[in-house]
Structure formats: C-alpha cells, structure tokens
Image 1 (cartoon, helix red, strand yellow):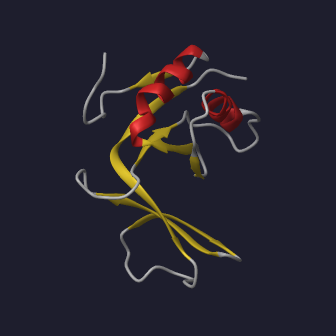
Image 2: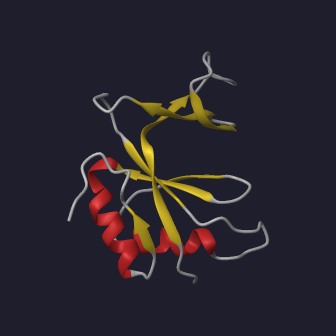
Amino acid sequence: MSSQRLGIVPSVFAVEHLPHATFPEDDEWIALVRAPEGLTVVRETWPTGSGERWIGLYGSAHDLAATGMLAAIITPLAEAEISVFVASTYHADLVLVPEHRIKEAVTALEQAGHRVDTKHLAQPFT
C-alpha cells in the first residue's frame, strides 16, 4: 500500500442519520449519502457542540483508477481499533475519526508510513 500525505481538515464534523428524509431541510451539509435506511448527513459542527464529533483527514489527490489508496489509510486505523466514516470525492478521500481518538489515529497513520500535517488541529499535540 502506498504512503500518503494527509492533512487535517480545519473543521469539526457531525455525522447524522435521518431515517425518513430524502434530503436535509437546510443547506449546511458537507456530504450526503442516501440509502434504503435513510439519509446520512455530514456537516460542520461548532467547536463546543454536543454529541459525537469527528475530525477529518483528507488524503492525497489520486486518479480514480488508483487502487489501494483508501485501504492504505483505513487499514492502520482498523488495526488500532479506531472507527472511521469515509466520504470520497472525485480526487481524494475524506476519512473522519472520532475527535477523542485523533492523536491515536495520527500515530497509527505515521507508523504505517503516512505523513500527517496536524497544523489545523484545535489543540496540537507533541
């Protein structure tokens, strides 16, 4: 699997499930996934918001034909037993990890050979 450069997205996210919706009532969303069990909505949340909060890692840009790019990121996170939520774009993958596990996630990714730019973390760690 290839090593990648990952950046921390400067926003904090919430992941919501709307079981009876086909589209959210507002336009404050970042990503939507519609499935038979309802709508999943990813949106920015306030730094002091309640509920589960997620930090985003944005991977290296790659061609759609590139294989193993997402697996290279989520495999070390799975081995560290860190939950993920993934939203892919045309160019790259947004991997969300629970905010309280971000330090462990960065460590797992770096040990797997990835480089993680942590400059956008609200509370940088050493």
